[in-house]
Length: 388
Ligand SMILES: *Cc1c(COP(=O)(O)O)cnc(C)c1O
Image (cartoon, rainbow, N blue to C red):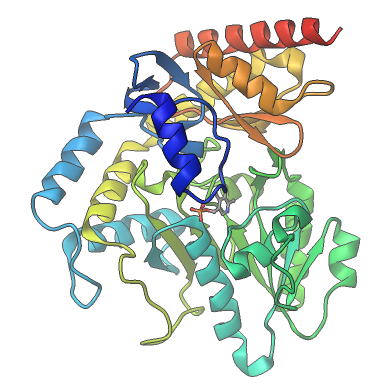
């Protein structure tokens, strides 16, 4: 099939939730590069939206997954299997051993699990309410959609469950405390919302309010986790330890896998939750490899590339942390910007209303950062000229 035929098929058969997509049909990738079906090369600063931490066709990840593919892909959580045992140990050791984990397949499911845990934990006290920040993004299931503090995601799906509400400031949080409130959910850096890092003092104040009122603090690390912000989990930089936190995007290095970790006194009992595919042997084999690859040296590289990009992008006032960076466009449209960069062989992704986001694989080099920044400034100049 050529690009045109693929586009036509998508228009005819696929629900148009992503359409029209960017005009690119991917064939394969290598390192930080993707290749389309005509062999054209793209430097990829999207990484499957903050997912492919090790880039494409990483030899170690390919080997780990291939070996598992030849053994067993899926066998159900009716049984024990070593890849899952290794992953649960690794993640709980990274988090601190007072956590326990549950595996699922996506970020939405991980947050859904977290919200169900709040309900379960406080069931006898009727504390089922969830507060989230305006401009947040927590997923597309009905509960996580409701926790997403952006109205345009709600359009067409109302009435939402009534136990969700939103806040922006610490005063507003305090004003919304009520006997039915069970949890507050936060992203340390709002990814989809426009790469908006929360201030440390704000997060610590929220944590204090939660402690004082016996409300659970949930941190959504679906986008920020697994080293994306330069530390294994972004909350480490905020001096807090959440009661519950979630992982997905980067965890499998591109393989779908999600996780919900909670302090061990916050848990389900037998039969209260589950997943057919969650934490299957293949997903765990991928995640185990990612856990071993994202070591101190890799995190140091993330921080180094981050500083380098920050310095070079200074004229655009970048924000973010690690390799989750963004800059706002004042007069230009962010989708036009991303499209123009794509034509020049650089993949970027939009966020929020006017933000361009950079979430490259961790394996990028200085030379690749140079190339990315050069194209960004070229695009900026060309689009600005068209405007004036
Ligand atoms: C992407 C994302 C989700 C949803 O993850 P899915 O795997 O698409 O369900 C939830 N929370 C955050 C912060 C995300 O970035």
